[in-house]
Image (cartoon, rainbow, N blue to C red; front, top):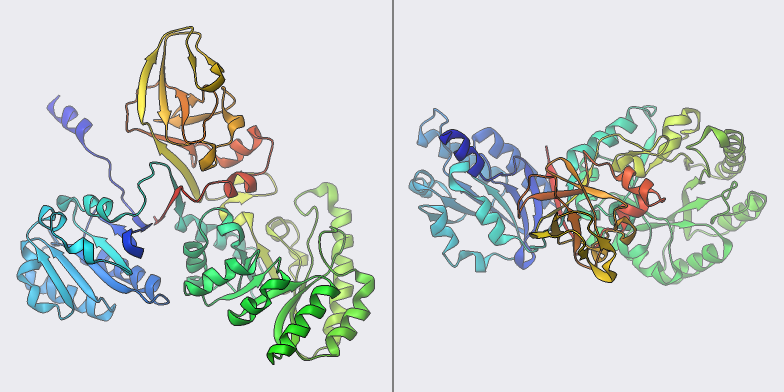
Length: 516
């Protein structure tokens, strides 16, 4: 009984490496559950790769490394070597063992006998513009350090599983010919997941291109240190200078834009600026008409300001066998138009028409490159199933109250109770991206693995759920969507597509990135 009681009092902790926003423009890499030399090496490598393109100091907060079977001399000699080789600028050590090895560290260093001494010091006030790895043995309770340094404290978070993201990338890569290149869509803040961390991860895995919707999205990635080639899918005429300055390659879909871009490039003295030519093969959403191919070729050949890097089109129904005849017509039109363009140039012009569904269903249409969008984020567009779930939206129960039968819950008294009920309040509302149509029993979240229906109208910042039949308490987690409650199910209830649900998550919802 005593063991059971103690187990119930144990606080849950994260068992994985997480990336979070920190105060004073810092980035936190939280690995505060265990600490040994192997996992320290892995975490330092992650820190190094995350900071290579950012002008930020590298800081390590490290506890004593316990129960290794090695002497302290051996352990901290190795720690000093690792920190030196990974370019650590500052180390903050916690514990008697690492403090006794202080002389081994040549960089800026601070040492504290225990975690509470660090938390009560003034050192956190001086941390700014740093990327901070928090690495500690469980005994030292470094989760309190992470909590002290985090920027946002909103109880609602969107967890992004970067391991799952790469598993999805590799799933689609396995279906490509060896020489087929890949464009990964990171527009709309990487479908709501947060563009920088996703883009950085994809860059590390050597994707050929990233694609954004507007130049400002690409500009932010460049400023954050992303060097992978970036296509701007919906460029604006006012953004030409931004694209020139940050090496962002625009999609060109009509003569008006082409002429304006050529004029601006010539004005700036720019030559051979890469562009991506879009052909409308039947979707009728942007693109040159196939009948205008000869005119397009003549316009391109009559100048030297821009040069086609790729030519592409969009398939309207690649996810459905119902439209296969139309899809093959699109592919045939594209082949003819793109071949005519290629014939006028000696350099290779990359051709691409397949999206996520096309990669699976149309291997013969891979051409030179494919565009991976929704599939990257774990959703198979062919059958609406989950490949590897990337995003989990979760929140925390703020309050639980007993409400008698016959009472109502929420605005407009829409939630009428037919029995004595336990009602829980969640700090998530339509301002966070929780659609109002999910209220009044139309959907549910999961609390301790059980369905808790939304009751009453969903408010701007708060929603209410019925937990009458669930063993739960204030502080427990509620899952809006994730592994056990797929986002596709939520989309079906809303009679929409997963894209809309994903991109509706508000910026005030904290994104937490982790690797399994």
